[in-house]
Image (cartoon, rainbow, N blue to C red; front, side, top):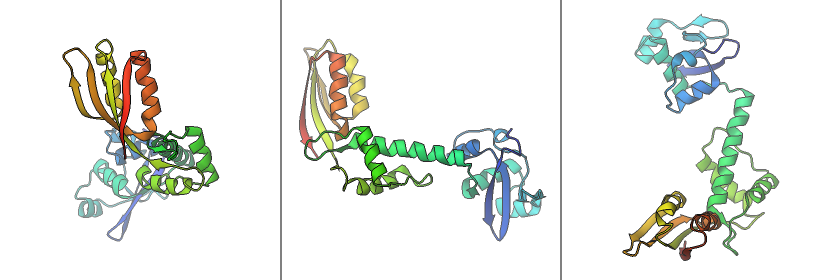
Length: 233
């Protein structure tokens, strides 16, 4: 159980009343993400307050009326999921950094230089976002922020999201070994195991993964693989 000194306040204002709990920041976020966490590891005190700092507890009648239960664990879950929560600066920074990395990785995987059709290196994307003064919001989803990041990047580096369809042919010696890798890089649109043991297929993948895919598949097949871009869209 988290100590009261280490806990932060989660608060829900509803029906003209205020309800507060003292929680472990990380574990409360896990509850909000619908992860299975023991509430004893979430709550610093198995109590529902109207003012946690003053130690003023909420009445059972108010909880029954609003939350349909007086069980502090069940009420606490509703407060965490529906209310607001104080986050430590350390946790905010961690959230922000994780989302920044996800945004950069998505751009690297999906984005290419429209002239060369080659992906931009991660450090180039990082530097361009820094130059563009792109601010990552720890509460906004990665998907929502991705479009804003692209808008800020385009005046600095040429970039376009592409999807490629790549025809692949692998000989019988390496086909089975390479198959799981191929699936990890994209969606297999068509495939056939031929009578001579060759595997042939068409894989759809983000344009930014093309070079990495070739390197990976060549290392597995020791160069004995044929791959051709059929379509770029």
